[in-house]
Image (cartoon, rainbow, N blue to C red):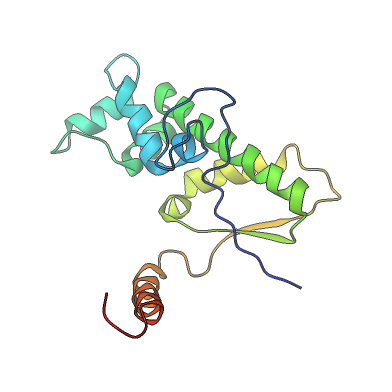
Length: 171
């Protein structure tokens, strides 16, 4: 079995237009489904009328800007605006993952990132993944057992890599 790793954040999920992405394109998955994009979308509609639960959470905090946990908690708490944003993100991520499944036919997809620590978000994503994938593609989808533990190690590896690529001289 060959193990492969992919970062799918720059798969285009909006055919034309969409928010600009850090990669220079627009309409990338990252512009819809990343935690930063979810928070940005929530901020765009944050009001007592459109996102009442999130509005209340923000009013109780200092500073008042929501973070990804606030948006997910508001969605879980029945906030329709926050739930719609999370639903759109989950749907986009689910569509991209389903494309990967049908294209590459992996045995397993391992999710890595802070957002997958949130039980509500993970539940919604796994529910989304149960729809639209046929039984011939019985792929296991799970959160990495190393979730949130690689950042410190990766920084050290990148420093060693830069050192070696630079001929053993500090950059």
